[in-house]
Image (cartoon, rainbow, N blue to C red; front, side):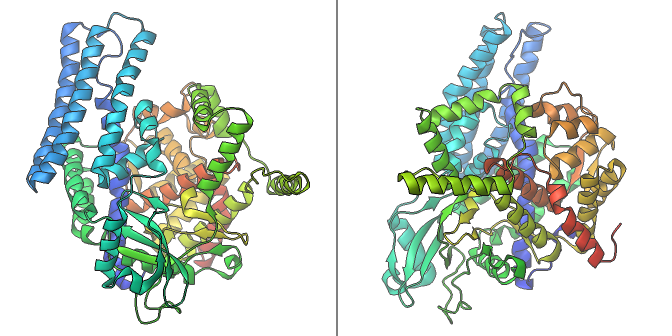
Amino acid sequence: MLSALRTVVAPRSLQAHAARVAASRLGALTQRISAHRWRTFTSSAPASPPPGGALSFLARCAKVSVGVALFGAAGVAGYAYSDEGRWRSARIVWLITKINVDLAVNGARNSDKSEEERERIHSEVHRKWAPQVLHLTQELGGYILKLAQTLVGTNYLPQEYSDALEPLLDSVPPKSFHVVRGIVEDELGSKLEDIFSSFDRECIGAASIGQVHCARLKESGKEVVVKVQYPEVKKYFRLDFETMKLLMGSMGSGMKKEDIAEMMNSLAKTMENEFDYRIEAEYLRGAAEQIPPQFVRKIYIPLPIDASHPENEGRSLCTERVLTMERVPGISIRKHLKKVLSAWAAHKGKTVKEVKEEMKSLYKDPEKVKEALTATGSSETAMSLYIAGTKTINWLFHTNLPVPLNGPRILKLLTDVHAHQIFFGNFFNSDPHAGNIMQCPDGRLGLIDFGACDSLTHPQREAFAKLLIALADEDDNAIIASFKDFGFRSKKSNRTFLLAYAMMCYHRGLHPDDMERAGVDPGVPPMEVEMWLDKLDSAETFEGHMATTQRCVWVLLGLARDVGAGSVSIAQMWRPHAMRYLESRKKAP
């Protein structure tokens, strides 16, 4: 872990950087352990006639009891901190207990029915409880809400809960303007009217930690956005963290116990800095000042309104709970894609919800999933012609057809920028999702939200570069060796397990051709590959820098499909950068 915490960023950012690396580990483990256990608990009721009769059924009920007991222990941990924490944890325990009891009872009642009928009943139980899970998640907020946002669409949750929680990806209930005003004035030490000539009462976005408002500086008239952290978020994070800490320690995982303990202890020590917006301000300034010449006319990274800003010299408007930065003009790629989807739905005479349901139904068929994973997108040239044609039609016929994005061009630029950050910058942003990328009126891409940054040491960069080159060149022996050098270990060192996970994490995701080449049974549906692999071997070490680089790759892979670039290989796109880095270190193969 110590190697993962080494960094080349400014010394005063070291502790915060360590916090983010540790936090990424918690997120990765939560996905791979806690969320998986949640799925296990909520699937504990018999979905088929209990083998062995009553004794087997009692054994399965015992599993449910163990799960409830563990969550009950987590509630006790909350109680140790405050009555509010006890009540918070107890509510989670109580809801999970009721869901499990309902599943167990329905499983027992319907054990003699057909498998199809049992699956339908099982789904109805989940669907019944899903709105309550959403309501409790929204009400509790904090890390519980962040966890829910992370798990939506990952296949770690039953589909019914994933569907119910999906609105959390777009927005969460914001705090009142009265609360926001109080936080900003307390943090900046002045009345809003003394700093801003205008400050929008309605936020433009709300998340688990805080919300964002548009404003205008009083002295310079510059348009800015103000990110405000919720007052209770630190306290809730601590309580949620202690709950998850107890759960993860009790449940165990494929990782070594000492690795889990070290990870959790490191996070506990650095948690004070986890929500310090001054650190993100440093990352913003560093990223903006380090844009290489070839990207200057293509990328815009807003500067924080700190003491170094040319229009606000001598006073910083960035504090622990308030981050003020230049406003990036334009619309986020996520919002643009929503507009395109709405137009498409209207063209088909359907609602957006109906179109989404149709899309989801397609992915119940493993063959459709394989088609989606292997689909190729249009070329950059083809998209340029399509965009020009759409604009011409709008001009000639006075229509308002949504102009599509040039997905291949956007993806190429983003992969180049992030590869440069990883190999040649002081740090990289691990979360370049569509909501954090703005399409500016002048054609540039605006990159915002640098709250999830990490960096690699030179030995880590060298191992990563060799891994990417091996993946791009399909050199399986080199893939396994460099994957281990980068920090991945499994208990049995199973060749198929190592190859599949290396390809999954850093190449083309769950691409069927890659999985088959690694040795995965072609008959295994794509969404069940991980479960199939876990029968062969289990991960023993997955270091923090692997969690952040893997997240960056998967976010870019998802973005590629969202913007129409289709199935791509991040390893192939990053290969030239990896080679250039190794050559600069005189370690090219």
